[in-house]
Image (tube, rainbow, N blue to C red):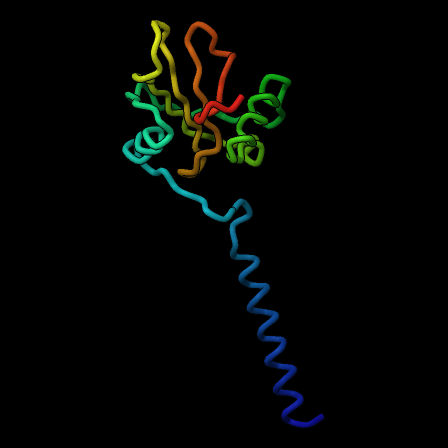
Length: 142
C-alpha cells in the first residue's frame, strides 16, 4: 500500500468518526424549528400570537403519564394536530401553565393551558370551567 492510499483511508476513517460523534452528541428529541419558551413573558407572548389575551393564574409541575388511557390518547391526538410532541414525553415532568382567557367572550370562565418540557411546548389547549374535559387546540383544532 502506498503512503497516499494510507492517508486516504485515515482521512475517510476520521470523517466517519466525526460523523458518528455528531450523531452521539445530538439530543434524542430534537426537531427542526424547536422554539424555547423559557419564561412567563415568552409563553404569554406565544398565546397572544395565537389570538388570546391571557392572565397567568398558576404554574405547577405535573408528570405526563407513561401510558395513555383513552382520555389522554384523545388529548395526545389533539396535540399532534397542533404539531406538539406530547407523546414523545411520556413519563416526564412538565411545567403546566394555566391562564385565564380574557377575550373569549361569553359569561363562562375560559382557561388556556400549556405543558412544557425543558422550555419546549409539548401540549396546549383551551377549555371552559363548565366542561374542562372538552378541549380545543390553541387555534381552534378539535
